[in-house]
Amino acid sequence: MGQTSLDKSKIKFLLLEGVHQSAVDTLTAAGYTNIVTHPKALPEEQLKAEIADAHFVGIRSRTQITEDVLESANKLIAIGCFCIGTNQIDLSAATEKGIVVFNAPFSNTRSVAELVIAEAILLLRGVAEKNALAHRGVWQKSASGSFEIRGKQLGVIGYGSIGMQLGVIAESLGMQVVFYDVTSKLPLGNAMQVASLSELLAKSDIVSLHVPETGSTKNMIGEQELAQIKKDAILINASRGTVIDIDALAAALESGHLAGAAIDVFPVEPKSNDDEFISPLRKFDNVFLTPHIGGSTMEAQENIGLEVAEKMARYSDNGTSTSSVNFPEVALPAHTDMHRLLHTHRNVPGVMSAINQVFAENEINIRAQYLQTTKDIGYVVIDIDAEYSELALKKLNAIDGTIRCRVLF
Ligand SMILES: NC(=O)c1ccc[n+]([C@@H]2O[C@H](COP(=O)([O-])OP(=O)(O)OC[C@H]3O[C@@H](n4cnc5c(N)ncnc54)[C@H](O)[C@@H]3O)[C@@H](O)[C@H]2O)c1
Ligand SMILES: O=C(O)[C@H](O)COP(=O)(O)O
Image (tube, rainbow, N blue to C red; front, side, top):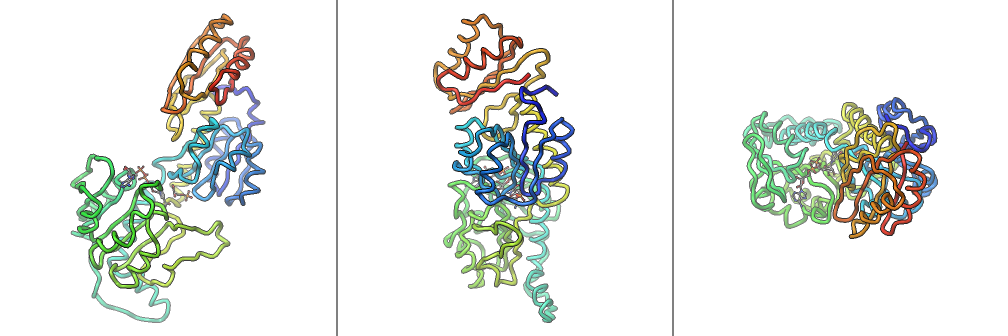
């Protein structure tokens, strides 16, 4: 592990929302000791106060990192999302400030897929409703409306990591899988891509959503789409709450058009476990309502803790930004005996030439240089001899277009 210009004990990691102990252990093993943890998301004002002197923040899906919050985070160099979704962060504001965002793109994939399969089986057997009735003393032994999952058609909307994993498990249970995605995807097993959302909705016995929260997915299942779903089909959403128009879903359940639903994510979710969960779906016995637990298994949380903490420690130690969701990706070797300058800048003509001029004009030999760019920003890493790093840092910071520059040694 490389050393950082700031003593490791002074680099503050703020970990929120009960991030798994494996994250703390990983950071501690990497030599970081200033780790502040909170079991819950913080109210906005407290978040602003605590993030003010943090170099790294670790969150899950509840903490909203808005532009306003980032205004208070002047020392922040990276955000670790200990989950898949990154929609809770204003990514363009973070990028503008040169803050790298990491997530765990695969660690809870299996957990979500397993939950969806379990819900699909139980909904096809009417277990949600029969269980609720039994708790109220009603004995409803009947085969009517109960079906095996074998031979049924599963429609997956969003055939990414979770959608694909779900499709594979579903096929192993004898289901047929169709999927709809905005990009062409290699179908795993015998799955088949359909050309339109309408086609998928009209064909499927079970419709399951696995898209990210974006402008294009907002309310993608509304009144019109619900009407296109086969009568007596079931709908599952463990992606993001904004994807379904929840009032339209309540109406489709009220009318009996759908046989049931399983919803794990909601347009508005309680801020903490102490707050009441309010939803028009609460009255339906044939609907599984779960508190955003698709990825909440011990296995997933431990793996996520390890994965994201490693990414943050590596970025802190040597500048590696591999698998960041908003930054040019640079995988860096160790920089033994050298000082390493990390320069983030707007990707406009002239910046790289101004950077290289600093070294030419001051007769500083570049021992190694790594550059990656995205459309908007460039990330250049330059290794030089130790004696020049203070001067170079000052000069690089003065270049027009610089977002941020730091030095590691
Ligand atoms: N409930 C939970 O606890 C939980 C856990 C993990 C992930 N999630 C959510 O699940 C989402 C999906 O996770 P993933 O790992 O499979 O993501 P992914 O990025 O691997 O896959 C998403 C897929 O959706 C497709 N897509 C995007 N916009 C679309 C649109 N408008 N129509 C159709 N397809 C579209 C993409 O092309 C991609 O194939 C995450 O973004 C996250 O919000 C929820
Ligand atoms: O994006 C995700 O991975 C899920 O929504 C899980 O979020 P959580 O860590 O808040 O459970």
